[in-house]
Length: 202
Ligand code: HEM
Image 1 (cartoon, rainbow, N blue to C red):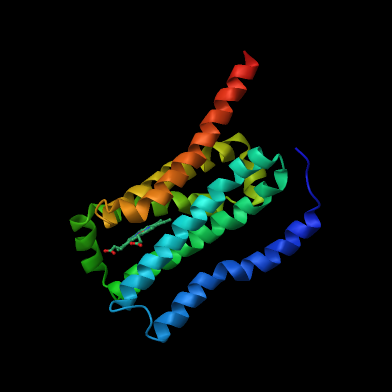
Image 2 (image 1 turned 60 degrees about the horizontal axis):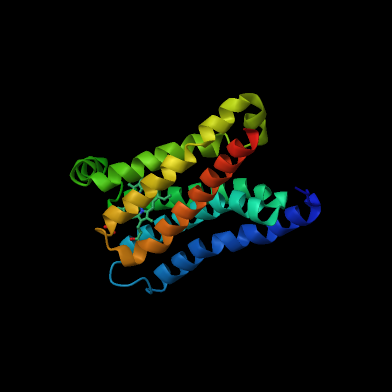
């Protein structure tokens, strides 16, 4: 696979960075302008959760794009997309705690026990924390093969987010199926590639 000039990748990231912040600014702008519907706090929480999932899927799409196009530069966007997924997940969780519950932890604990889908989301969130912390090249070098093993956590985390989403929507599949299909496809491409590699080794 050909590697590309790092120059335009770095430049493209300068454009992508503010672009990826737009959903948050748009939601804040709409919220202050009273355009987030009858329950703006809930819409804000939900929309940030949705953006976190979208960035997670985009991050997972980089490797299949690398296979399909035989260009390695896609991998250079993975870290940025993963960190944006984590960023939106943080905004989702922080706004859940402070906008929906005003930081009343005792109520949140009761809510956790009452609604298992929140436990599922929290588990996915906990899995994303070490991935975000160790996403730097320094950690990658320090951890060696352990880094690759740790970062496979992204797959169960993505499936837990899907389950969290399904549970929130009470299996209202019309909103979820494009995300579910994309996730299955993105994981499927990896499984297929591994299978083909194992065949070529025989
Ligand atoms: C401590 C962690 C988490 C908590 C407490 C939490 C809580 C919530 C709550 C309360 C809702 C809305 C439920 C409703 O509308 O009644 C929700 C929806 C959602 N969350 Fe989370 N969540 C967490 C983690 C995550 C993570 C890590 C992601 C993605 C990376 C995520 C993605 C979503 C999505 C996609 C929705 C559905 C949005 C929609 O209805 O359009 N959540 N979450």
